[in-house]
Length: 194
Image (cartoon, rainbow, N blue to C red; front, side, top):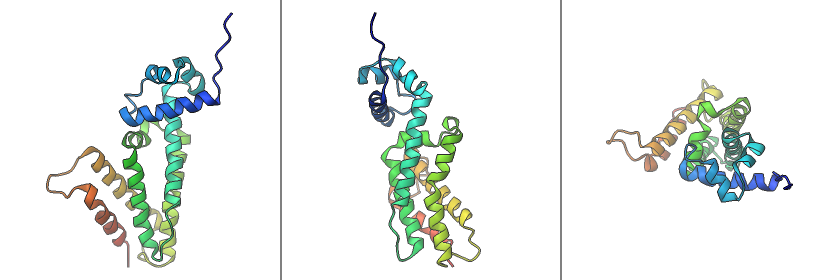
């Protein structure tokens, strides 16, 4: 009788690593479990045993992406003007999103997010909210600037810019988002200054 296959943490890491590459190259719909399993030298049974299937595998990658985004935003250094840190955080977010567009799309696919993923999404934006609160406390934002509203406005503009850049949904006369994004992000932040 053949020995049962062992689906351990080493195999889990190999599957996640290759799945991340495939998702980055082809998107969620192009992530084939057969291709993944063949590339790693296992069977699709391993994916089901370790992740419960493709949705669980993608969820694990998305959840890690939210954790990474939180660290990316938190690692933006302090600046003498806290409002300038907001611009720098926005640029860091944009760079993170553009680094892996297919993963970014999966991160904001509402149908893929369960309660845990939504919590991680909220936690990912905590450094941005904290930076807005610091800017408000330093009086570099208007007195009527509610930190949660400012953070939402900045994130909305940022998410919109990234989506425009990734999917090229823009009028022809609009400046290329790749070169104009810094000015747009600065304008959003400056709009909240006294």
